[in-house]
Length: 329
Image (cartoon, rainbow, N blue to C red):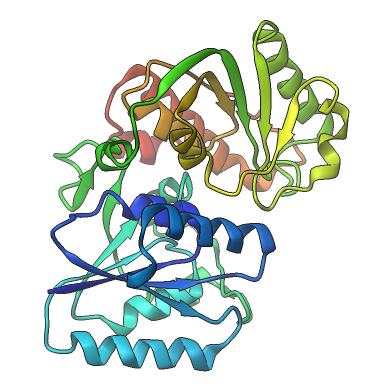
């Protein structure tokens, strides 16, 4: 039985590692044309030894996309199995999943975006955008009537009795692929994100949070691990205070491959924080909350949702439907 995995980032590739190793997985990988993003995908595939399982979809080629779909259809027609996708908002992911409507549809983690998907499914009046890549963006309520309803495969600790179509993992397989890592007490890393670029945080508030991180780790060697789509010029004020790095792998794989895990890991609502919190390493994980302001009013729902989630994560409790429904008033 052959299952299909449709992914568009290295982080989604990482999430797929935890899938059942006994299943025959075929990867359809769509790059987005970003040099850093696409290089991370290539490095992740090489590191995980998945080259012989991967088919590449052109960056903006609908023709290539549909030819790959037809090829996959021919290989799996009349069979059961699953289609795994890494982005519930991605137009290409939705089209691909719809094309295999008779298979079980499963959403694998794409960082904290998985939380947003769960919330929007529970609150069907919520409106968002579907990302279409080279296609023109369309409103979610247009796509909602045809968008699949996914089962979940996630590291988010959802309450199993309330989410029966969810399987929760703790990155056991990912850890097992690498030699045992040591926790380096002298290291601290801040996981970069696009909070300023997206309008979630002002530059002043961003600098305050990073400086707070530096003060909390004044005795450690500090690294800012920039996000693959982050504007590096905003990090100039910190280059004399910490090392600014753009890793060729997702941060989780970078440190696993290095064999040294920083003792302190901080950031803004990052899926990497979930990884380091749930893996077996004895490290300190800190989420820096974002204050609600008039300028980020369009994101207030997401801010409250993420705050509620990280409070649960830090307490070791499962996330319930009440948490997600009640997080946003």
